[in-house]
Length: 162
Image (cartoon, rainbow, N blue to C red; front, top):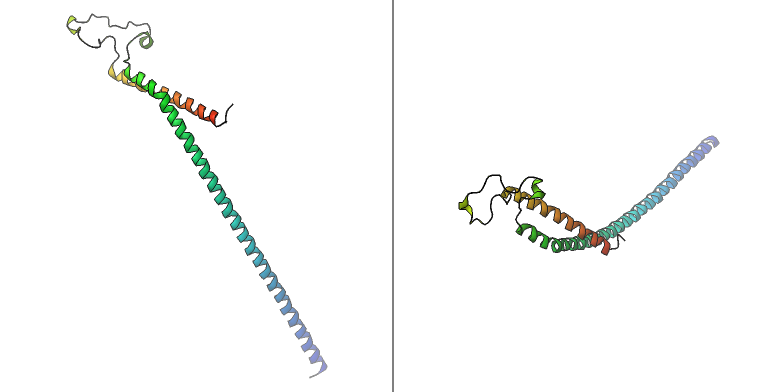
């Protein structure tokens, strides 16, 4: 083998060694990068799981507090509305100046004398459908007002309003 061939073999060997070295360094770098990346992903997943668990506990605590507040509001509303409901339902609705304005409460024609033993004279009571609607309206308004008062009381008890 001539000196030129030996030189060519040495140069070729050096080039192959440099190429193998470069590939080895890059492979090691990729391995280190992937290991670091996997560790970062695992760390992030652990932190996310801990945050989700913490938030779930906070949500459960908040839900319990809200359920307690709702039960208190409902209880106070029922306590407040029960006497009002009984009063509204047991009272009959009579025609008067509050319902009819300036019109007379009794009809213009005279009643027959045979109807004197009736419990409620027809000229004084409103029709049953009107009475039903008025009672339902009064109950709805009173229930809403009682709920509002109960909500205000709970907010005051929890320190949310002065």
